[in-house]
Structures are given as structure tokens and as C-alpha cells.
Image 1: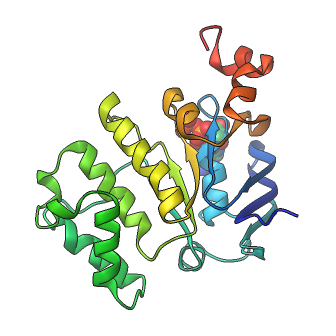
Image 2: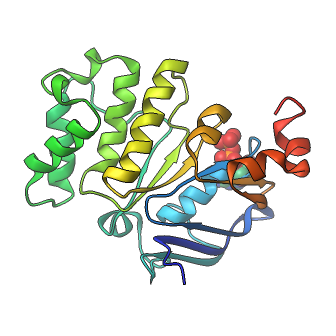
Length: 239
Ligand SMILES: Nc1ncnc2c1ncn2[C@@H]1O[C@H](COP(=O)(O)OP(=O)(O)OP(=O)(O)O)[C@@H](O)[C@H]1O
């Protein structure tokens, strides 16, 4: 039997009559990247909110390392290794790269926050910029710093909502390579919501496609790309 790091079962989030997410099942294995794609309003961000605890489940269950965390809040889930980064950067412009990562680590209660910060910054190739104020970093580096904030305390699962938004092709590629590396060097499992199809199909081990709050396809990148329903509903004939 497969031991999933993350398992969401029959997850539903309804806003009054709007079924933003309805009966979704998702799993992540250790070190796996699952790409989550679908048209605007399909429910991708909502499912991330459901898994992190930002939105209360209308129905369903979320398990982290085999434990039901559905009743826990965002902070408790984060402490147990369920981390996320946001679409918009959450860094402090005037603070140095090192200081904000170390502070985030300290706030999470990590005992040796200095060692934690150093490991995060080295992993993301930000160590040489540790004394630079965030405002003085390039945009791609700021995004890596954002990712760094999500990595303090060595999370097991990382949920990313459009991490490539606004990045150049080169910057996206660079971030994608860092993500891929993290899954092997840190054993992190990643749920990646992203509109950049080259990135999603390039680095995901499995891809899930949403439409109107439901999963319409799931499988290897090649299987999903070849799925007629996906091509019709989302990828278009150019895929
Ligand atoms: N707070 C809310 N109240 C009511 N409806 C909401 C709320 N938040 C989201 N929705 C609706 O839920 C559905 C799913 O939205 P969601 O933002 O999860 O989609 P998405 O796939 O992440 O879209 P995008 O790719 O544009 O970010 C949409 O119909 C949206 O209008």
C-alpha cells in the first residue's frame, strides 16, 4: 500500500450555492510534484486553501502523513509540515535576505534558526545575497526568497499558487529547476498550481486537471496531454 504524504479525500468547499470545489481527491507521494491546472475559476486556489486550512471544508478530509488534520488551523498544519507560498510576494523590502529567513524560522519555533536559514538560502542559491536588502534583489531572486519563507522548518509538503506568475522564461526555468532539486535533496512533495504549461508539463510527475470544481483528468504529463477532454476543455488544439 502506498503511504501518501498528503491525501485529500472528497474535498468540497461551497460558498452558498457556488460549488467552488466539489468532491476532489488528491494525493502526494514523498518527493512528488503534482501539477494542478485548469481554467480561471476552476477551483485551484480554493483547493489549496482547503488543504492548508485557510477555508473550512464543507465536506471531506485532509490527511498529512496519515493523520487527519481537517480540524486543525493554518498555523498548526504549518507546524506539522504543510507549507504554502502565495501568488503575491510576502517579503519585507528593507530587511536583508538572511534576516527575514532567520526571523521566519525563529517565529516558527525552529531551535537553530540560524542553521535553518543558512540551509534554506544555500539550497536556493541565495546565500551570496544574504546581506542584500530584498528590494535590491532581482524579481526572480525575490520569488526565490518567497519560496525560502515557505521552506523554513523543513516542511514535508509545499503548496504553490502560481509561483511563476510575472517571471521571465529564464527566471521561470530557474525557479522550476530549484523546485525539482528540492524534491530530491529535501524530499519535499509539491502541489503546483501554475498557468505556465511548459513548466507544469516539464517538472511534474503527475498532473491533475480541474474544471468547475471537479477533477476531469489525472495522470502522467503525457497521459494528460493526450486526453481528448483536456485538450478540448483547456489545452486547445495547439497542445
Ligand atoms: N470567497 C468566495 N465567495 C464566493 N465565491 C468564491 C469565493 N472565492 C472563490 N469563489 C469562486 O469559487 C470558484 C473557484 O475559484 P478559485 O479562485 O479557486 O479558482 P482558480 O482555479 O484558482 O482560478 P484562477 O486560475 O483564476 O486563480 C470561482 O467560481 C470563484 O468565483
